[in-house]
Structure formats: structure tokens, C-alpha cells
Picture 1 (tube, one colour):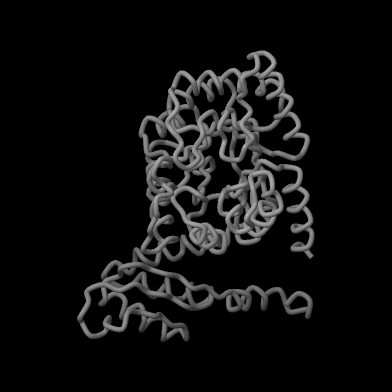
Picture 2 (tube, rainbow, N blue to C red):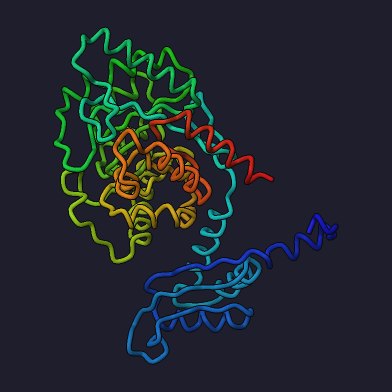
Length: 386
């Protein structure tokens, strides 16, 4: 419209008519669904419902609302006057559309403020394990002093290569991994965090589900807790709130020892969204600030190859939550299975997955190969900004 010199006031009126959305609502009472359909039809839009929603054979139906932004705005005015919970549904629709359209988000990390959705943020992985699935475990049998010095050099290289955040983890979460003792995890991670917090000028994240590890990490310079269990432990939620830290809330089906044993979903994206939404509500209730929450759909954590691909393809759907989206595809087995590639041969697959994930809605990518991913994303961003 600007290119053809439309009047600014006209653009303001007409732009919402060019923004089309499909919104899914689960398990709405049929009487409410029928009112909703009639209201949408009166606006020139429509609602798809189950074939028996009009006959009374079923009590509830899922709905697909199809319309443009202007129609949804007018729908909400109508719904505010309706019974059967439709006034509350209007609030939910407004919130979903607002979150979906949100194109900026400032992640508050104390002395660091990271602007998201302007450019993708890269989280560099530091695996302080001898048995990482990706083959990059840094916890070797050398002397402690030599090992720590090598790890610090490795971290500084990640930052030079373009890492915006460093994610430190001491326990492997690969499929079939055995739990690590608290003592061993503390020994692996805390001395390193103490050192690198004084050496680097980017935020540090601790990858752990143990509150005791998180507490010591936060006390020694970490600013983010990356919890693969999605903050299921109330002690972890309370601790993060106490330290005013940020939280990465991830979806995982089962636990690392069982998660890849034939995972099944009735509706993959819906189930992950429901889990993450509930986890976010618990985080907020526990006192974690809104501008300190990141969500992660959990690639590879209780998902098949097809599940992982569907998540990447439909990442934009997670925007309705209203929080930055982190995706972790780096060197994972689904890439190896597709390419028939070993651990050290997955860099091109990782780069491809990261570029497409960002294009489809990811705000952050967690990777081993920082330099390669940084370069690829920079080129993709330049092309997309034209």
C-alpha cells in the first residue's frame, strides 16, 4: 500500500483486512460454537465445527475460526455481549492475536537486556560431560586445572564466534541417559561458571533440573535456568523467582531414560502448547517475571523424527503463548537419521534446521556450531529483510 502511495489513514483501515488468521479452539460447548459460527458468518468470515455439532449428538466440538484481523476485531465486540463463556473467549482471542503479532520482546537478564525478534539469538552449548550425545563432552580425564583452562578457552571461542548466551550443563540428557549425582553435577559445573562469569561478557545459563545446582550456579554468576523438565519442581520455580533469574521452560514427554520409547501424541502441537501454557502459568504464579520466560517445544525429548519436523514446520503456532521461542536442533538424531550421518557430519543439517526454525518463528537457537549457524542466519536475515 505504501508502494502505491495509499493514504496513511486508508492503510490503517485496510491493513487489518489483509491479515488472515486461522484460530483453533478446543472443546467448545456446541451451543456456544453455533453462536460463534453465526456471528462469524454475519461478518463475512466462517467457523468450521464437527459435523454433529448442529444435531445435538455431541456436547462439545473443536472449532476452526477463519477470518481476517478486521473481522476478528469486530467479532470480539459481538462476543462481549454473549453468554456461555463467549465473553471470556473474546479475551482469549484478543490475547492470542496480540501475542502472535508481537514483533519485539526484551529479555530482562539484569545487567543484560536482549532484544528478541529483531534478530535471532544464539545460545552456545557447553557440555561438561564425558558422554554427550553430540560427541562434544568437555569433561575429560585430564587434571582439573588443565581441564578447566581448556573449557574456558572453548567458551571464549564460542563468544568470539558469535554466541549471545552460554549454556552450561553437567548432566547428559541423551536418550537412555542415567541420572547424575548432585555432588558430581556440582563438581562439573560450578567451578567453570565461577571462572567464565569473570571472563566473558554475555549471559550464562545453567542447564539443570536440580534446584541445588541452579542455586549455586545463580549465586556464582548464572542468570538463566534451562530446565528440561519444564519447572515441574516447585522448588525450582521458587528459586528462580527469588534470584530474579530467567527461565527456559521446555516440553519433555517422560524422562531421558524413557522418552524415546515409542512416544505417541493425539495432537502434537496442541499437547505441547497445553503443557507449556500450564508451566508458564505456574512460573508466573511463583513470581517469575513475564519478561524472564522463554519456551522450548523440546526437539528430541519424547518425539519421533516426524514429530520434530512437524514442530519446526509449525513453530509460529507457539507464538500464541506470547513468549520467546527457543529451539534446539543441534546435531540431534533426527538429523542423523534423515541424512544417514554420524555425529560429526550433522553440521549442514543443523544449519538448515536452524535457518528454517528461525524463518518459522524461533527467536533463539541452541547450538554447538556457533560460527556456522551465525553466518547462515545472517545471510537468511539479510535476504528476508529485503
